[in-house]
Length: 116
Length: 112
Image (cartoon, rainbow over all chains, first blue to last red):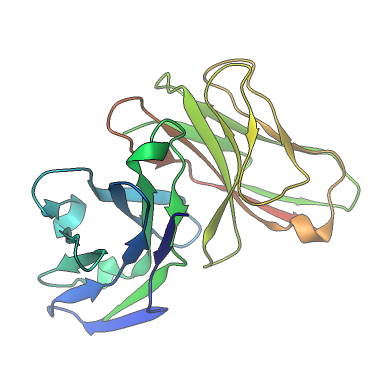
């Protein structure tokens, strides 16, 4: 069965510092991995995805994520955090064997708080 | 990016009322989804559709129903709302190429 875990409910960083939001996954086949961001009272916005190819994926708003197959991880990173990055972040996964359904399994979310 | 529109954005209704949450997308995506999310919590898939006249139950049991008569339209209906239905409902769609799911802004439902 597919699953995804975000081990931290909240991550606190100071503005200008690098940030990391962690995600680990479990799938039977090859993973398709996604990160989304959600601002208060809004829907989810797509940030980036890994399907195949280079393990380092670059996305919107300066975010990037690194796919690590041996550790089954897909951590979200940004070199220099902004206060406006404060939001709820979701990691999501599906495997290539369920790609026809298009269904994603989401983690429980991590709240990122960036302080001035 | 897909353009997905949800109405109403916010709705407060009384117990026992029938409500329909509307969802439309303009990109011609075949696959559409409804997720339920309590504030600040994880998302749960409650319905999905592969295309016209196709609907499937999601991973979380829901008393709501859906229909897909047109490609662009995927409404969700609650025949008799109860306070336990209070939640945010997120509609989404995905393109055949790229696998990315795009979300609408959500509909906040409060049943009193």
